[in-house]
Image 1 (cartoon, rainbow, N blue to C red):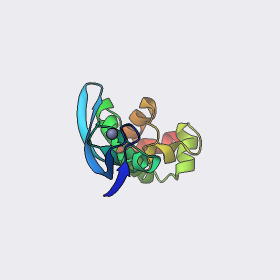
Image 2: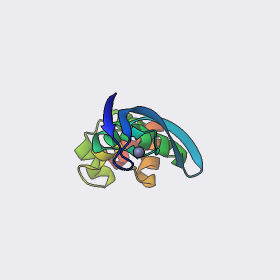
Image 3: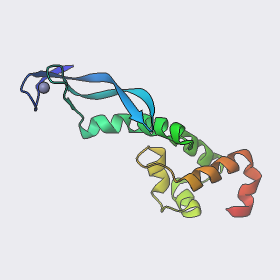
Image 4: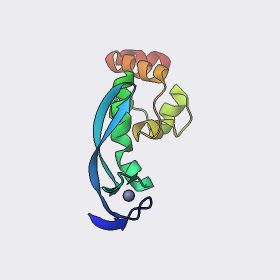
Length: 131
Ligand SMILES: [Zn+2]
């Protein structure tokens, strides 16, 4: 925790992690979010590093609400299918960086890819037919 000046009101602000409430499609969840917080005006400044720190958790919560595989589930299933990230992007579409982005929570996995991976997770013998 360190001292900062609020960009909005000029009062003392602090850099720390706070529990921040998110609303997504009518559901709510909380994440411990690093940022610069001002108690005088309520301003929260989230820097790129702070957003990167919670990206994976945020995407995980959104994926659960959307009924999609979470980033960690995608990684687990990809490994189970013995595919590296580049090959998985080639097989399922999206390009060689697609799975890196899904697994780090940078981008939400397309619904069709999520459902296909779900099926292959439960019926890995089908992978031989399509990969
Ligand atoms: Zn302020």
